[in-house]
Image (cartoon, rainbow, N blue to C red):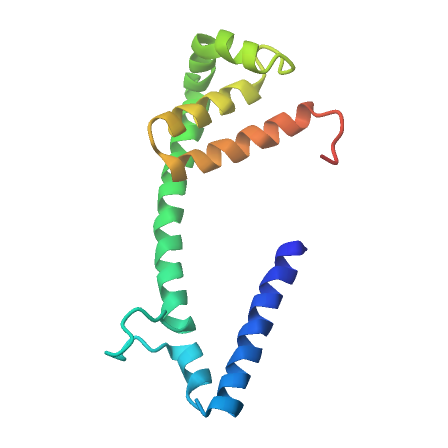
Length: 148
């Protein structure tokens, strides 16, 4: 809810500033620059591209991240079915039982947390995200206060 208001504020401020530049300073191309960008201008090479170019870049990044996340979610599913997560959680379990004493031994949350920490330690930042989400979901089952 708060982010919606922040982004709405950003958009409104951009439109107001563009309107002021258009009406008071005579920059009639300002709205066109907002949509398609001004990257072809040799005088201002550091200007941000327009909305369309930026959206294209965002889609390319998201497609790559979806592939990485799908791959590691598949690895997690295979490891979970094969018992690898349970084995890894038994090995590292004593360390996690001291960090998280509220989580009972043998609970799936321990395995998900182990996978998340392992992926982060290996530097697989984007791949650790699905493991972290799964760990939070399984920890929420243990939470007596479901609203938080």
